[in-house]
Amino acid sequence: MERPHRFIGIIGLFLLVGFLLLSAGCTQTEEAPLNVYVAAGLKKPMDVVIAKYTNATGITVIPNYGPSGGLYTQISQGQPCDLYYSADYNLIEKLEAEGKVSEAEKFMKEFVVMTVSKTGQEKGITTAANLTSENIVVAVADPSAPVGVYSENVLKNLGLWDQLNALGNIKTRPSTVNQVALMVQSDEVDAGFTYSSTAVLYDLVTTEKYGYDLSEEIVFGDAIIKGGNEAGAEAFRDFVRENSVEFTQYGWELYA
Amino acid sequence: MRKVSIWEVLFVPLFFLLIVYPILAIIGNVTIEGMIKTFDDPIFWDSVKNTLITAFFAALLGVLMALGFGYFYIFHPGTIIYKIADFMNDLPIALPHTVAGLALLLAFGRNMFGFIGPTGLAFTLIAVVLAMFFVSYPLAARTIASAAEEIDKEQISVARTLGDTPPKAYRRVVIPLLGEAIFSGFVLSFSRSISEFAAVIMFGGNVPGMTQVLASYVFTKVEEGEVSMAVTASAFCILLSLMLVIVLRLRGRLHARSAESA
Image 1 (cartoon, rainbow over the protein chains, first blue to last red):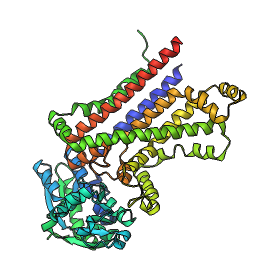
Image 2: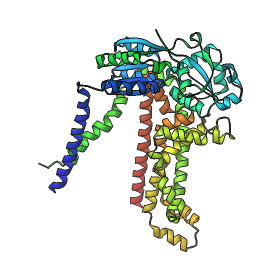
Image 3: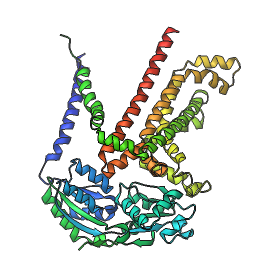
Image 4: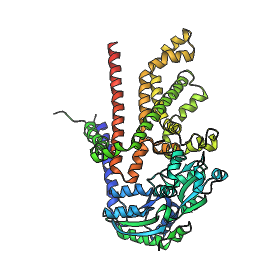
């Protein structure tokens, strides 16, 4: 009669201790890991830079990759973040207005491009106006990813947005730029709108690159979040800048 | 003084903290402003309509397939088909949802099913149904299989000796006895289908007004920073699921009462 109760009591104790340990782990300050929230499109070069940084300093960097809008919501709701790399500088300005940013800067310039898949090339798609033909399948990211907003701007400024929607040619609105690239790469769509860097990363054929008059200025920025490990964030951010060649090799230009 | 058992001490507070409290947090955060914005948005209502229709058909398909599985379980448990189906019944649950979505896209997209249309089966409402079916079928299968296990095999043998072929016996004896399980299997699949989004986004297309479902509507609103609308849509989802569970419970109680009075 006594033994089962003791056993269950021990399990309960373990659960309690487990909870306490999990929550306590986040308040240690010595060599604390750095929480960096990074826009999904920067994953490949950022992984390389993080590995370099950990090798050089021994500090663990924990990246959280996702759509910039989702990351903004997480930071805005108070999730622990030391440094935020956004694909949309507007989101950083939003955080600044909320008083959450200690130091922000513009990092790189990016452009929206139209990438065409194998079948899309066979169909002869070279310019955005070609997309309004029949049976063309287009992928445009969902507005939760900044590239989705920029792509919409381009198509609206070209006067094609309403037509494309009426025709129903925009068949899919994935939630990240990488998903759009994946669909073009696996030839599930004819054309997709991504960043020029994404096209390089995924080895896609780019047929058109759009200027800021069509897409609006696309600036990737970084922001050191107030109340986090600001010194650590600043050190990592400077390291990223020093190693910007990892990024520029994919076609990004530094915002000097 | 009655000695309090350890179950009562641990279960009650933990249950309220871990299950009830998060749900109350959503409902408690609903604002009038959020409700007005959301209910004014035709895309919201489109996603509700799409969700209800696709989840219904996904659950229907799931139950029909689960009944098929039940047939093999009762009459041909030794065959390869049954063994494979039994083994794979739980596989979709083990798969991460984006992987499931990608798998469906590569399998039914235009590279393999291009003869159907420019996108194959992908990016259509049918794709949404298939994605929902894929992730909710295991629930229906498990419900019906465990109910089939409980059936008195003698009733089936009697039907067989009286001349029924297996399909006839299945239709006339087993399925009526499975009535309760069919209903709860349907409700479980329906609920699971409503909450699926990763696979649906990948394979279904997530185009607002056409293939966007309620779960991805909420997701998009969160990612856009429109938290008040996301909360309203989530609360709507919760109320929907709550109503389903209540219906299930009432049915269960009615059934039990009629069984008692019989």
